[in-house]
Amino acid sequence: MLDLPILIKALILGVVEGLTEFLPISSTGHLIITGSLLDFTDERSKIFEVVIQLGAILAVCWEYRVRIGQAVMGLTSEPVQQRFAAHILVAFMPAVVLGLLLHDVIKAYLFNPITVAGALVVGGLVILYVERRPYRPSFDSVETITWREALKIGFAQTLAMFPGVSRSGATIIGGMIFGLSRKAATEFSFFLAIPTMLAATVYDAYKGRDLLQAADLPAFAVGFVVSFIAAMIAVRALLRFISSHSFEVFAWYRIVFGLVVLATAYTGLVAW
Image (cartoon, rainbow, N blue to C red; front, side):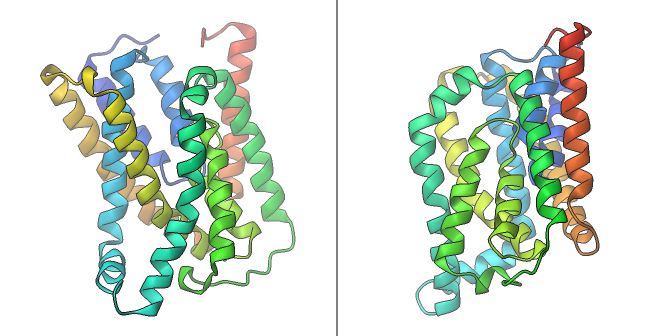
């Protein structure tokens, strides 16, 4: 394992969180694997992950601040904005229910590099299957979907409670399966991430509040800022990328990365 100063570890993990949170490659999985390599897996690391995740959330809030502002201002008078907010709420509810029921069990038994690697490979194969089947989207924007599609995507998101699946991957690919265009599925994934990740962040922060120490503030600040910047870059790059490309490159990345982790574990090259 690498023995690096804590601020360097914070910078590395901030970059990893920011770049992977909104790509369909599993930020949680990458943080588990990177944290294992950096020997940063103690209880303090868990609250650190909460902080850098908040940085990524705020990045997408800033990127879509105008659209979010429109939704908030139109909640009392504009049917389009009311429907948009209702669909986000409908999609959010499955994660709330199943998250509260399964959160502790999943974190206790599934948060390890081997489990993540297997999920990366399986998820990559699913993305390849979805991208190579006939694809005729019925919805070109998030405003045109119905509550049924929103609920289906919400249930798809719950698959991401299994580390390595990827929350964004589950919602984007789920959206495509249920008739959304790549752009609409990706943007709906971004919007759905805001309440989902905020709820998870608040819940984890409350449970880990006793681990907060003033001495950790510099590392938390570095990770937070770096995660915010990296997430902003990733969100903008992904939107440009999907305008002319499929998600197959992410599928192959997941498969190769997952197989490398499994191979190093099997040969004993890395003691995951």
